[in-house]
Length: 131
Image (cartoon, rainbow, N blue to C red; front, side, top):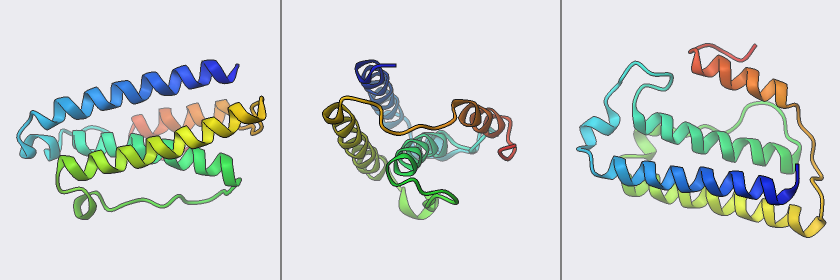
């Protein structure tokens, strides 16, 4: 897969994420944080998990670090849409910087197991741990 293709996937993801946040901003905060029985409870938590996952995977790829990723306390750190937006901007900036490095190098210089990542995503969506 070419870096142009990967950049397009990230751009689409960022676009959708911004639209999702715009939609959440129109809801009363109580609805944003309401536990809906989903994988991460509320729409806020699902949104934040998607940010943590992107940031965590890219940090893992860049620094080749394994083990637990830093996880934020959603209740304490994200008490409004603005805090969520700031974190979204932070993650997107980190991702853009990583993609710029890939573009500069002319190649995808990190490898990872797609199968393992898919199993992780599937397990999390089902409410379990990674197999």
